[in-house]
Amino acid sequence: MPLESFRQLMRGIQGRLSISEGNLQSSQQIAFVRQMQKELKQETALYTQFDQLRVVVFDIETTGFYPELGDEIISIGAIRVQNGVICEEDIFYSLVRYEQELPEEIEKLTGISSLELKEASPLSEVMIRFFEFVKNDTLVAHHAKHEKSFLQNASWKLFRTPFKHRIVDTSFLYRVAERELSLSRLEDLCEHNGIPVINRHNALGDAKLAAKLWCSYIDKLKKIGCRNLNDVYERLARL
Image 1 (tube, rainbow, N blue to C red):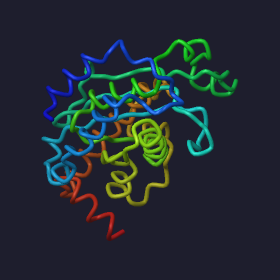
Image 2: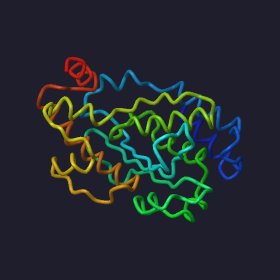
Image 3: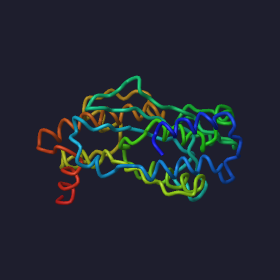
């Protein structure tokens, strides 16, 4: 099914989805996600020159660290980077419905209130809109294990399909470009690269910071002879 058919499918079902998060989603949603996963062209991205690579840098905010123990996604933010340039207007941001009271420390950290989350769209709808935004682009996240574990859990729980998008971890880049660097936190790496730390712990704000970090390290990697992601992975294997 081509992408335009996906869009037509989604236009046909938007506004009619009323299934609660705890139940299996509609057959239309499941079919959409499964078909999209089948059509991902991950190997192509490995050999695409950095100057021609399209990526979506994203971040999620969650209620905790362990989706298998019941922690949930409460927001997703993303921004596209094309041909090494951040597309400032090409962004995605959504809160995610959460029916319980948000822990006070999470409210303070993220600036998100329990009331906002109770009025937000359910995760199934947000994820499908997110997949529509991403299309076939490569995903990038800072220390991506957190994002990957939550998206894998949600993809199986909601759509009964594995999460197959490639997620490139920004740590792969700086481990190759600056092997002796001992920093790991997003804010520390941004400061190290002269990137002002703004809107931290907001999903879209963190995605924008990670996108700037991505661009900074892509420039550094090109200077040491890395032309694409495959070159980065080969060098990582030798570290």
